[in-house]
Amino acid sequence: MEVDKGKGEAEETRKVAEADRDTVTLKSSDGKLFEVSKEAAARLSTVLAGMIAGGSIDDNGTDLKQIGSEALENVVDYCNKHANSIPSAALISSSISFNTAPFKEPEEWERKFVDRLSHDALFDLVEAANFLGMERLLDVTCHKISEMMKGKSPDQIREVFNIKNDYTKEELEEIRQELAWAFYDD
Amino acid sequence: MPPPELTDDAITEILLRLPPGEPENLMRASLVCKPWLRILTDPGFRRRYSAFHRTPPVLGLLHACQVIGGGPPPSFNPTTAAPFTPYPYYRRPLDCHHGRVLLHANDDGWYFVVWDPVTGDRQRVPEAGINWLIYSAAVFCAVSGCDHIDCHGGPFRVVFITTEDYTDAVKATVYSSETGAWSTPVTLGTDCEAFTQHVQHAINNGGAIGTFYTPYVQPRRGALVGDEMYFTLRWKNAIVKYNWSKNCISLIDPPSHTAYFFTLTEMGDNALGFACIEGSSLHLWSRKVGTEGTAEWMQCRLIELDGRIPGVKSKGGGHVVGSAEGVDVIFVATDVGLFTFELKSGRVTKVDDVQAYFSVLPYMSFYTPGTEGLVLSQLLIISCILHLAYLFVCLGLIRI
Image (cartoon, rainbow over all chains, first blue to last red; front, side):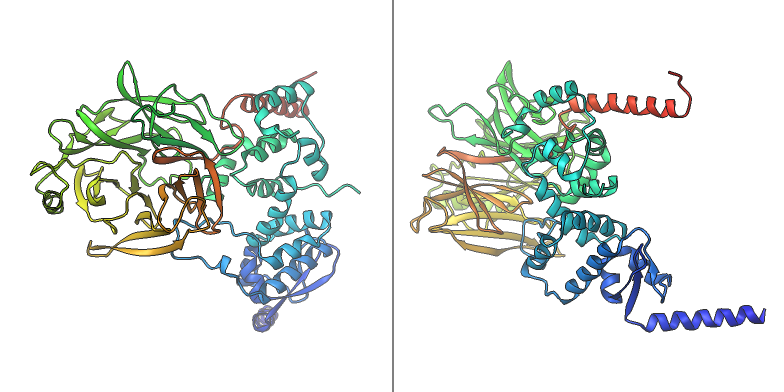
């Protein structure tokens, strides 16, 4: 019983120490550690916010087994850049409007942030953002990919996404006739 | 090295962000592979897609035009690549709301048609039984609590307002698709003090022949704000308020008595809007209703249009003939053509030639794969059956 009590106290002390820190340490699937501001992590990721609130953040590096080091580095980089950015007028909703659309165009720095990523890094970052519940990062990365799809034929889209065509020739022909309007510039 | 394969979740997130104003991109995506087709035609995807984008895009424009002396035949001009089902032949368009179009038809007697241009669904609504002289009407979704982002096919209401022939009374009534009946018409009469003053003003200021004043309902698109429909009378831009849930009618003052042409609109936050061009400036007003029911007009935007929209000059020359609620777009007709003006960006686009408009009716709806319900849905069913068969084979339930 004594030992258990001691353990409990140690746990409590560790939790208090953890709560006092203003950064959290995240560990990628390949074992690399990254530090990120606790405030930014909690604000930008619903999953990390839940872990911080629930006290399940590990001081020695919270395991994120689904995320590789390159993607996690980009996640942390995004959090840091976001913390330092000043929201533009576009992000401040106006009270005088017919209605406001929920999706906000990426900021200039967000555009630059995704533009410098390789194709693979961008795809990995979408998965990471989705896993961590980072709505804004999902917006920015998915917006970039959806721009890559615009005006492309199904063949070209398959190439972008590395997808095999599982339609038969007859099926494709039937749909193309029905949806000729969607293929006006092919 | 090929790029990493994405999970269905990540693919869904990407497809969700394809812009609704370019439905061809969604259609092409559905041809990439069957898993994508399954994602795109899942009813859950459509719900998420419409909730994500919140405001449906303008897919086409109908024109309510002045037809004295013979106008052009009614037409429906798509503004995206997405096609519509055939336009019901020679019908007069009156309104668009919540994915539906209201048409007035006259082949075997007069009646209304509520038409869904995407699915092709048409429902016939009988006349309201009022001997109309000049009128306007509206159609909208009747489901209480609906956010109206994507409400095709459910119950609807049609509001009809008219200056009655011979009696010259302004009457309004509402039709329910659930009961298949019109309400007892209500008349704007002397029990409404604002109307009594309006009539007196017309008589004293040359709006009447002697003491005989006809309150002409303007055949323009009305504005739907909560349980109320707003239409206008010709004299001094007076606004008729018709509460269709309580079936009561009254008159309210406009923010400008002098604007020659204006459009009523819904401004969000349950506020009535009034848009007009005076000189070369666009004026946008919002009617704020206080907690005690008192209301006042507040001017919320004043935008100089001279040099921005062809045909709008300091002496005038432009009319606001419509608005697309929720996307901050107004339609301006000048002697050069019909233009959209995007309030946020200031972008101006010519969308049609010169016509004598009463109103431009923007048809707004989402257009996702499977909506049109033909080949894609059939393919999906076939692919689901094959998928199930494959599963059964794997489980050893079917021997081949």
